[in-house]
Amino acid sequence: MDIQSYISRIGLSQPPEPTLKGLEQLMKAHLYSVPFENIDVVTGRYIDLDTDQFYEKIVQRKRGGFCYELNGLFNLLLNQLGYNVDLIAATVKQKDGTWAYPNSHATNVVYLDRPYLVDVGFGDSFIKPIPINGKKHRDASGLYRIKKVENELDLQRYEGYWRTQFRFTLTPFTYEQFYEAAHYTQTSTESMFTNGLIVTKRLMDGRVTITDKDITVTKNRSRTRRLLHHQEEILNMIENYTHIPKRELHNISNSSHMFKEG
Image 1 (cartoon, rainbow, N blue to C red):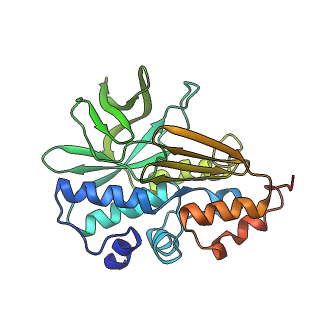
Image 2 (cartoon, rainbow, N blue to C red):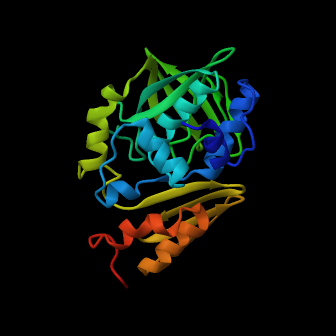
């Protein structure tokens, strides 16, 4: 992996020092530059858990990815920059209160003066490292805390009440341990990622989320949603907001089961 190419991909001129401040800079730069997207999943292109493939897709082809790719490649970058970092597993708590497939979310813990949760592959969530100490943590995306629940830890965001986003432990995970969950995520009809397009990216003043039906733009806490009726309209929105090259979107336009003109 060429570190400078990765650093340039996330909009930085050079790697920062391996400190908490440097980690914050890297995480924010990544979130503002690289989208979370499931284009390969919904168009039937199987994603292998291989960091060389992650690098080629995200850095060289200027794509995004889902948690295994985004947090997996970010883990490799942090390791090479001198951080003490572990790839770990989490179980997502869905908005209906049910738990998703166990240990199907890949995320990172970085050890500095204390452990910090660091995630560049979870969509709408925190944008700065969260200290794992139970204290409240605020950033531009909201108010968070990490609460200990018996032998596990819950990432929670305050939404009028403390809503758990996912549950995790500090046990390191290998890619081999993620294989079953990654296969489920990409192939099961019960997986949220197989049932429709999701492309989302942090904006300087909010977030954009594009599906195969609509686009939602949140700016300064004001949300605008617009239906997308045509294939070309969807592709243009993805290119304009995420800067994924149009040539990378050909699988979408060739996917007959996804988009119907209307």
